[in-house]
Length: 131
Image (tube, rainbow, N blue to C red; front, top):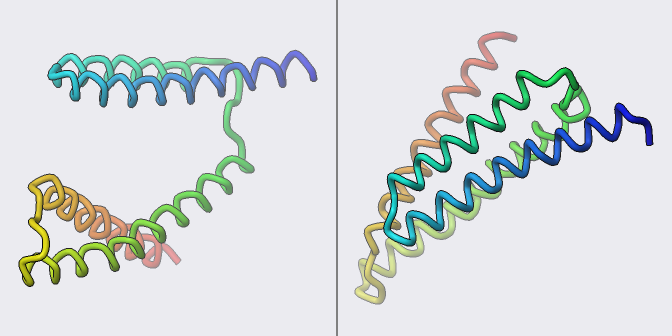
C-alpha cells in the first residue's frame, strides 16, 4: 500500500468514525436526558467530519464512491418505502380494530417518512426536468 493510499484510508476512516461517533453520542446523551448536550456533541462531530473532508489535501471520495453512494441511497429509499408501505397501513388497521395503541413516536416517524418521500418526489421531478 502506498503512502497516499494509506493516508486516504486513514482520512476516510476518521471521517466515517467522526460521523458514527457523533450519531452515537447524540443518541446516548438524549437517552440519558441531556438532549442539548447531545445536539452540541453531534454538531462538533459533524463539524469535524465536514472540516476534515473539505480541508484535507487528500481526495477522499472519487467517482467510484459516488456510484456506490448513489446505489446505497437508492436501496435505502426503496427499503424504507417498502417497509413503510407494509408497516404503517398494518398498524393503522390494527389500531382501528383496537388491537394496538399508536405510540406518539410512531406518529412522528410517519411524518418523517412522509416528508422524506415528499423530498424524494421533488428531487425526481428536478432530475427529470434537467434531462
